[in-house]
Image (tube, rainbow, N blue to C red; front, side, top):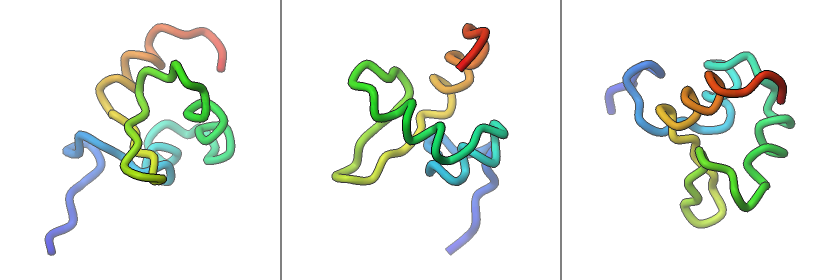
Length: 64
């Protein structure tokens, strides 16, 4: 199986999103626990980060 680089992915794991954004895993878990989180996609109990929505979110907030 070929490894896809993070910048080419549509969905990121929490660990990939942490590396991508320099936001800690614990903070990302806390952010994605919220029911109205616009950038989380649940696949069973696994949470994935919608990279485009995550980028939009980060571009529009001052603090997290």
